[in-house]
Every structure is written in C-alpha cells, then in structure tokens.
Image (cartoon, rainbow, N blue to C red; front, side, top):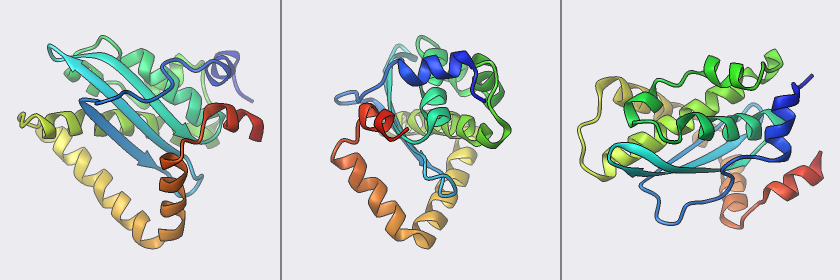
Length: 171
C-alpha cells in the first residue's frame, strides 16, 4: 500500500520535465522492474539551482524521482550527494518493501547527474563519487549486454517523449 504522500507525488510530481542545456544529466535503470530515470540539474555557485526528472516507471519510481528533486533543490553539490535512500523513503512516509529499490534509483540518478556535472566542467571528482560512478557504470554495462533489446526499447521511449500522462493512463 502506498502512503498518501507517495500518491500525491505520483499524481502531481514536482519538477517533472527536461531542462534545456542541463549542467549535468544522470540516467539509471533497473532491469528487474523496468524503471528508467533521467535527472537533469542546473548548477550555480556550487548549488543545485534547478532540477527536473523524466521517469518511465511505477508509482514508487515517479514519486521517489519527484521527492529527490525537492530534497536536492537549493543544496550544495556536496549536501545533495549525502541524500540517502532512507531520506527519500522517509520523505514519502515509507514505501512497500518491494519498492525500496526505487529510492535507490532516485539517489543513483542524482549521483550520476552530479558526476556528469563535475566531468563536463573538469572539476575534481571526490573519490567516493568516482567509486559510486564506476559501480553504476559497471552495472549499466552488464545490463546493456544482457538485456540489449530492453535497453534499446527504453532509449527509444525516452527519445520519443513518453509522458507522465501516458504513465498515469497505464495504471
């Protein structure tokens, strides 16, 4: 059962959409459930000035994407990197145990967006961030190899603009 707050974020997601010319982009997915998240950030003076997401996934995936944007907006990059899956889950009043992985995807998408920002701007990447990124890249490579057709389908859906409204219609 989803909490009232989770359903509110699903029905009226905060910061849904794409940022034109983002400073950083994070993309993560989970082959088990099929959820895919794109998270976009704009950075000004080391703070997340704007943040948006596009998610193809379930109620929990969309809700955790929405809530992580609320948690990260206005924070320094260092503060944003400290946002945990537990913080995401608690902000929603809990998630069913089978949906906990969605909170991890939201945190991973934010991590990847910040990594992408550091990389694009030739900034020194903290060792812990580099380690997280390498692990996520390793998992993504294994997923792409094992589930090539699925990955291509997800990329095609994103390219052609699968919308949140279409997602609602599926439920």
